[in-house]
Amino acid sequence: MKTIPPIAWVRRVAFALLAMLCLTGPAWAGKYASIVVDLETGQVMHDREADEPRHPASLTKVMTLYLVFDAIDAGKLKLSERIPVSKAASRAQPSKLGLKSGTTIKVEDAIRALVTKSANDVAIVLAEKLGGGSEAKFVVKMNTKAKELGMLNTTFRNASGLPDKKQITTARDMAKLGEAIYMDHKNRYNYFSLASFTWGKRKYMNHNELLRKVDGVDGIKTGFTNASGYNLMASAERDGRRVIAVMLGGKTGRSRDAHVADLLEAAFMDLTGVQVADADDIRARIAFGDRVTTAADDLALAQLRKLQEPDAALVASLDDDAFANEEGTAEDGDEGVEVSEGDAADTDAGDDPIGALIEASPGATPVQTSATTVPNDQAILVTSEMGATSAPNTLAGFSAAGH
Image (cartoon, rainbow, N blue to C red; front, side, top):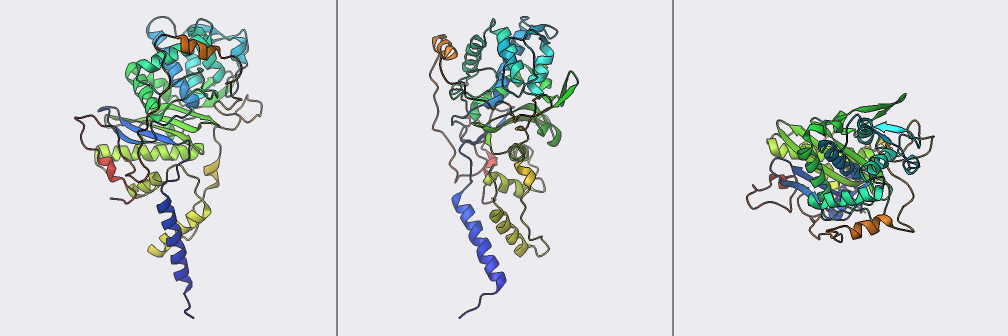
């Protein structure tokens, strides 16, 4: 009987595991969707499941802020104005500032609280102010503006992003919103780059970790609910070129951040033609997307590296911290309960005044979803939407095969 050396067994197992991973394709979560857009040309540099319905979570607050900025520009709201806190706002689910009914908050403080703390009570306060005392009426304005911006597959049901089964969007629509708020309110866009916000004796750090970690990132918003997964809309500018990336449905805050960082790096490599030292690693990470890597996967890859590079360490690369729920733990003032940027009981029950208002509003249209998606077996960074005059998309070179 032929004896197979131990190293041969290692090779066979490692290659078998790697082949299995490659054949199954990227293990995207069912909630996952992403898109990357070059703001200068409008070219979609990457999209995957970008037209599939997803829950926006606190990315909803970008639309809330868009309408707040509209009101300020129109003279209907002043940054120094103080707005009242209703009983409904004070009862909002966390994450929140903990505003008390009957008190007031200055408009500029409210903006800062939405950007950094992602405070749901503050979102309701602003909505009621601009909706004539009714969040439902403000939501109608949100949906009207969404249609004006071409967000045809989005329906808002509240101003905060708190869970509602009928509050849906797509990665492409969120990218349109990100582009619109930058182009239409460029003079107020710097709010999204705030590192922190101080309220009373507490200092709240911005949930958007990419502000501190990725070159050129200056906004814009994170989000999380159990239904949505971890969402992120990020924008970065380098050498005068701006890119917007949206990812929905991440499994952890950290893996989401890392994935969006990779998408941005790949986009700038394409725009500048400059390849970074770990370009191949970026390709590989994007290929597998936001997945929870198993110890066996890591060990197989480590074994392959060991065979190719004798000095490489034969260890799994799992990082327990990668699974930390960064936005799902209580902050100071949340009374020790486990919270998120909108993880609460679904509000889609009983009477539906918001739905009635939406349906009765002029120009109301049913939500539609497009079947245009990018198959998993195609190149990783590709576009399914290019204008007739657009140049060929060179990001298709970032394929799993490493072309």
